[in-house]
Image (cartoon, rainbow, N blue to C red; front, side):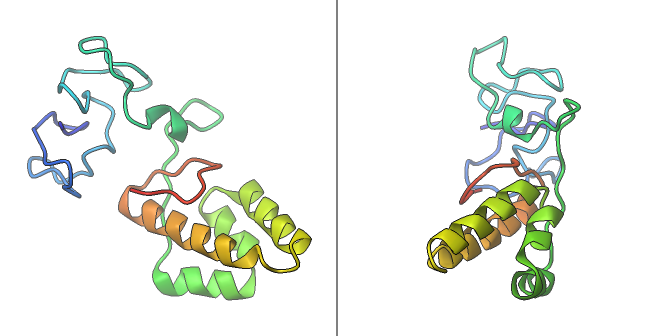
Length: 141
């Protein structure tokens, strides 16, 4: 695969590009499959035809790419124990947090465990990648 920021070839399992130090899929300057130059809001590579990986899942309402700052582990645990919806709001997933609260209430509390797993997985992805879709459930990075 190629770095989306500088187009240097990168190992598929790399967490950062050895050329520029950015997360390989974080940028929007190059195609991740062929390394060809792309435009910021482009959803398909015009050189090789592949869909630009997950790019359109991170668009905000204004069409900009939404950047999310994850929380430290201590802060994530604090918001989880004190007021769960605030933790989801800090991850730009406020409505999803309310949906999880509703699911937990409707299931007599049994929805609380998958909500906790989703919350910490979202925070981990936000910390690692810096991008998170508004309704992205149980994300992997």
